Length: 205
Image 1 (cartoon, rainbow, N blue to C red):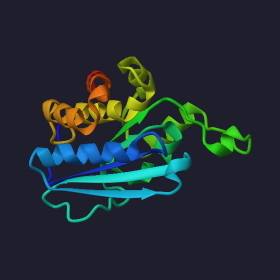
Image 2 (image 1 turned 90 degrees about the vertical axis):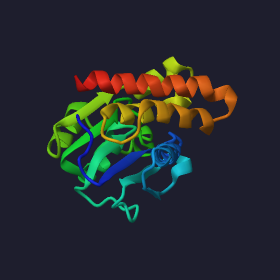
Image 3 (image 1 turned 180 degrees about the horizontal axis):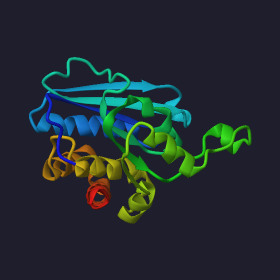
C-alpha cells in the first residue's frame, strides 16, 4: 500500500473506552505535526470511561480544515476490536483500508447475556462489502509481548505507520512516543510501536 496521493489523509479510529483510542489519536496527531503537516483531531465518544463506544478522527494535510470524516471518506479505519470496527465501517472509502485488532472485547450487553457477539467470519464478510483491504492481527497479544496490555494503542500506532498510508516515519513516531509517556513506560511503549509497525508491514505482503 502506497501513501495517499492527495492533500489530505482521513483516519477514523474506533474502539472501547479504556483502550487508549483518544491517546492514540493525540499521539498520531503530534507525530504528524512534528512532520510538518496540518492536522485536525475530532473526538466522538459516549461513555468512554465505562467501556462505551469511542470514535476519534484524525485528518492530516493542507486541506484538513475541520475534524469531521464523512461516511465513505476515510482512507484508513482503525479498529481496536472487531465489532467496534464494524460499527463504523460506513466511514471507510470504497478503496480504503481497514486496520483491525482481532482480539474480542465483549460489550456489556453480551457479557450480561442480553445479546450475542457476531461470528468473526460474518464480521469480515460485512467489512468486505466496503473494502477488501484488511490488515488484521491480535494487537493485544503484541502489547503483552511488549510488556503491558495497556500498550495496545501504541501497537495500533505502529501499525498505522506500517500501512504506509500516513506521512509519518517510523523514527518520528518513536521519538514522539518516547516523549509522550513517563520514563518508566518508555521501553514498553516503544517496543509496542515497533511490534505493531512490523506486523502491519508483514501483513501487507
